[in-house]
Length: 150
Image 1 (cartoon, rainbow, N blue to C red):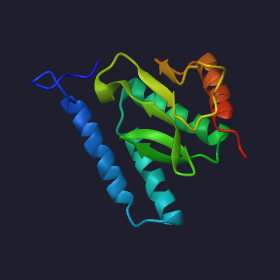
Image 2: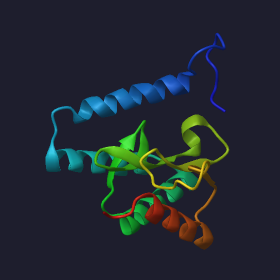
Image 3: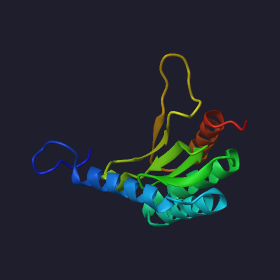
Image 4: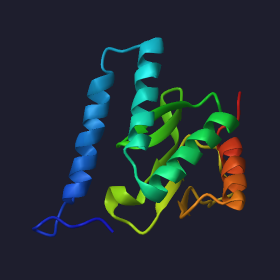
């Protein structure tokens, strides 16, 4: 769980830093369009992955490959500093490393545009401790389902 502020109310220092990071991401893209914007977003995603360590980095690298292979129409970017993949500018999938909020595990999360709907309730976030063959196959199925090519 995220650390609390000194008063115990409101956002933690870690959450405030994430919000500041998101504002910086948006500001860095201001005025960029087309190929220049896509290149900058891809660079930011790869940079976010390269800054991770240990299991977080290994998982993020594997997720990056999986998304590239299973949904090449999704564009890499960052989302609150997380490696993310978007369609038409809207984040579909992102990896939240355990180290970001000092949690026990990282998560692969599918945001609202993901097409995982399955009745009145379905999972959208998956804890990932390591990418085994079985985990990789499940992630591949999820990515294909969440972001089919049009």
